[in-house]
View 1 (cartoon, helix red, strand yellow):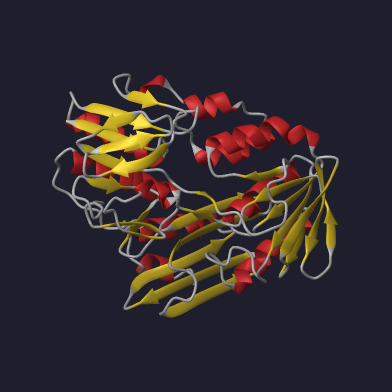
View 2: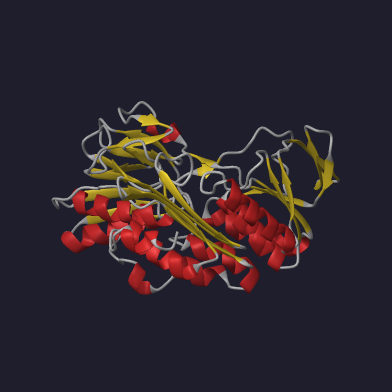
Length: 386
């Protein structure tokens, strides 16, 4: 059986390992447009402030790699031909498959800002983006991060810890609005400001100005002009569906998959950030790993199915530690809330089932919440802390 995996992130790597486990003589090829192999994304951002070389993060250990897997690197899939069971690469090379896994992840969704193509503007979604930014980071002192989501907050904090002058810009009134309610977001914002980060909310950037091929400032719709010498775009990601071409693979923002992570084409599967399962796009590391494992099992003939993942997020900053899971914003159910200064806990339940949880600066309760949302404990063991 010839397996082809497009993408070498956690979903693709895990699927390859699982396929080999169940089919020792499988012909497995992984193709990626990166010159680097698999990397552990949660370590990448932290490495900026710890003088950690990327080589240790990217390469990992030899046991992470199957020497029998063929790696096709620095080549991009430009078209999937589901009739001939082949993909076409950007150099016109053709790779055949019996079963195909799409695990490409996402790419930066750049906002419409004048001169966003400036050389000192960085979008961080793939390992090559991080490698390039780190190679230039010492030449910058004033860095503006556009986007107050999880990535924007995390990278702002790390750069601040490095001694950079950091400004975080969010077009909405609230930071991390997909994960946090208003009170939790306010606690986050006040912590960032106390840590030395300037936070600007409810403002849209409309133009980047340059001076002798380097960034000079950002201009806002309100007329405010903000000086900086580098910009990081953290406004969101999107799936590039151009590779689907004229194939019969159905997509709506992401590729639609069923309970065996199968697309609308029988021998083509999808896992990770590019997949939408039952209307849910997870977009986190643990879900991508779990989907990769299930996809690998299904593709190698095992009888199982994907039942969804716990949508959980963690954030650990100076004076701020967050755990949240499930549906935490605009959820229907009873909300149990406990506030104790900088400690904040919110549990949403319906019919005695956990719907969502936010735990700030309380590692003990966070550990119990994690066990509850993964099904190891009942919600009763968690309710008493709210």
